[in-house]
Image (cartoon, rainbow, N blue to C red):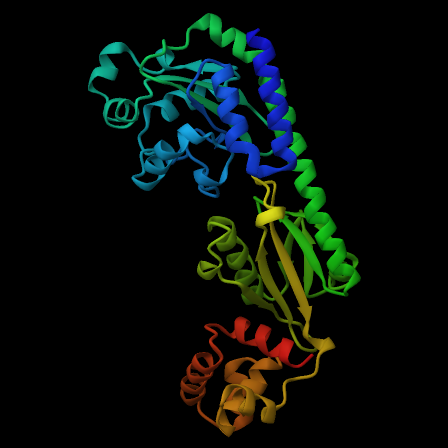
Length: 377
C-alpha cells in the first residue's frame, strides 16, 4: 500500500515536469507517502573546501519545494542559516563519498542537538525535528532531497533509509527529464529567434553555451569565438565586460532583471561593435533544475544605420550637442574617441553622457546603444 502511494505521488511529480506550477502539491503528496511532513530539491557543491555549502548561483526559493517546507526555507535563506550548518558540513562529505541516504542521527548526537542553535532555534521552532536527505549525484549539478518529519512523527531509521534509497533513480530520472524538456524549450526559442535573423544562444548555469542559432554562429570569427563552450571576445576589455555581464546574471535571481548588467559591447577590429544582451529565462521557459538559465542575444550593429541626431532630439528632448554625442555613442564609438571627433574635452563628454543617460532612462553605454539600435531599425 505504501509503495502504491509513493508511485502515485511520483506520477504527479512527472506531471509537474510538464507543468511546474504542480511541483508544490506533488512534493507535498510525495512527502506524505514517505511518512514525512515536507520535502524539496536542494543543490549542493561537491567542492568540500567551499565556505558556503549551498550553491551561490541558485536561490532556494526557485527550486521544487513542498508547501510545508516553504516558510522554513524562507527563514533559512533570509537569515543565512546555511552558514556553519552541521547538517550541510557533516552531510556533504557523506554524500560526496556516495552514501545514498543520510539521516539526522548520523549528523549529530542527542547531546549535540540539545545545545544546537540550528536544531533548536530553526527546526524545533518550526516543528520539524526529523531529517533525512536522499543523495542524487548528477554529471554537472548534484542534488539532494531533504525530507522533514514533524514533532509527532518518529525520526527516520536505518531500515527506512534503505527503503528510501530504492527511489533515488526515480528522482534522477525526474531531474534528467526536466532538464531535457526545458533545454528543448529554450532551444526552440533560440531557433525561432534565428528565423527572425536575431542571433541568440542558450546559456546554462555555468555560463556555457547549450545551443546557438545560425545567426549567432555567423558572428563568430576573429572578434568573438567559442572557447571550451564559453563565449570569448578577442578585445580584452570587451571580454571582461561580456564575462562580467554573464556572471552577474547567473548570480542574480532571474526575476530581478533590474539588478543585472543587461548589455555589453564586443569591439571589432573593423566596423561597429556587436551588442550582447541578457534575457533571463522565466515563466514557461523557467527550468527549475537550472540547466538552461539565460538567453544571450546579439545585435550586429553593422546591420543598422547610426541613429539620426534630429530624431534623437525630438524623441528624447536632447540638445543639439547631446544628440551629436548620443549619435556617436549609438554608432559604437568610444566616449574618448567621440569627444575628440566632436572637438570637446573628455570631461565635457562625460557630463553630457550622464545627461543623455538621464533623458533616455539608461545607465550604461551598452543600454544606450541597445535602445538607439532599436530606434534606428
